[in-house]
Image (tube, rainbow, N blue to C red):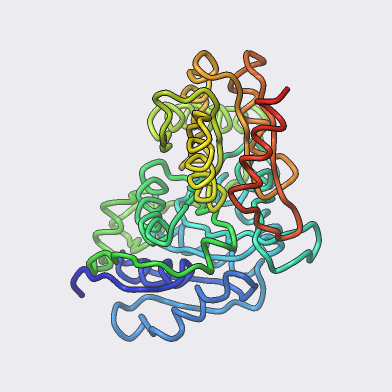
Length: 361
């Protein structure tokens, strides 16, 4: 399949990209607003063309444990869900992180708590960017702001997951999952053979024989001293990721007197908000974290010496703002603007919040 430009939803782009990047297996369970991921894969039938396994599990818990097994064999495996479903997967995600296995998780966020609403939200920041499950672990968290990035981050997510033997997550919101845009799909890549998997993942269980040593995949360690060594190794790896994999976008920040900080759909709305603000003579810039972890702490801290204030805009009651405030360490005023319950604000609301919370104080 050659590279082509098509019009599709963000959720659909993930499915098409997964096939074209040579993913070995998808294990999931339907939940709005991400059900199109599984539905699109079922429609495309990649098991007939690339050999990719697509399976609707009996539950979210089953799906993440299937991912655990596939990842342990060195295969490119993934799952997708939405907020309550990700909550159910948390134990399995922690096991995968503890076993140091690569995989890709998709979370298309909806409003909560509880069953909440099927409308978009960004209220899973705490449960994914902060780890979510039990133990001291981290997920490499990518926050797409377009349908194109939904497709691109499938490849990037797997690249980073295998590079660091760590689960990666695409943390999208319902707006990005459901919206339609033009997207350039990647060219088709071949799935790796078992020998190629073994060469890439010598730690994996795939293809073992009497001529190859056995590998044990586990997150269990009964000796406290050894478990501490494992955790210290994890933390050292996380430091390397923090040093090398921070990604963010800056828009009109060169002369900014105020800074908006937003991810996902709120960053898109923020772009229009800064245009409206500049039409009124207010110099506003936008910093969009692309990696929510590792977080662009140093970049945000650098702006604390350049701007008069920061407004963090999120579809939640205030979650990413905690990391922004930690980054600036009290050097500058940081305020929050958010909508809840699945309500998506318009750019004028952000401009109004900027004036009310920072400029007119």
